Length: 276
Image (cartoon, rainbow, N blue to C red):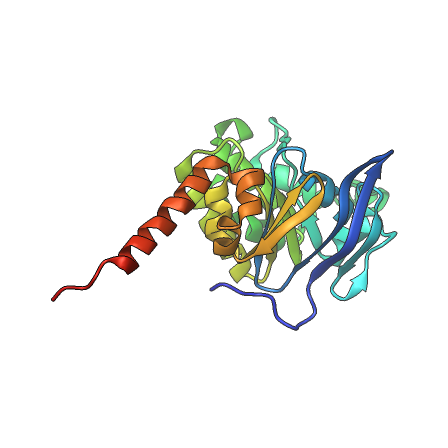
């Protein structure tokens, strides 16, 4: 069920977030929100600043402005600290260890090695670990039956979902998905959208960045549009699809012609007299 913005405190919120590289502003005072139970889309043409925005939110690049999570500022926090608070992300490129199983690839990503963990493994290498979160993540993305496979045995869509499982393995409150549908065919993209809805039903909100407009407009509750680092539109998917600025900047003339044809058909229908 779709969830629209309410008066409740957002899980994730940015205010005037700005990322500058010399005289270039990759993000220019971007303000947006992600609320509980939402899939929020962030779209825009190549070079619009979408991945830079995720890098800033997750602490991988410096920024001006503010980022708040669960009502508290994240400004100055490291990427690791932000992840521990419940803010997770995927990466455009899914780098997998080909000699490890699917489950081992997940463990490596969700349980980074520390001195304490290495020492514990040396003292009690066969001790039983709690693997419930990782098993849960694989089940959620439909890879439970593939836990013992090697990455080379996975389809591209399954490899992408393993990347998503890595981000879910810590049970975050919000996950930022960067181009998860890149390279997928239409059937795989449709299946991906169904997985996203299942993730939200399990209490994890999503910010989705993708070029697959059918996917974004189909699964998202609310959409923001970037162009050259600026927010040029926001709203429900239907509102964004019909926004002239979005059509000009991103969706292109084909979308504009479809909109004009739909409006002309509607006008003609209204003018046609009804006959018994």
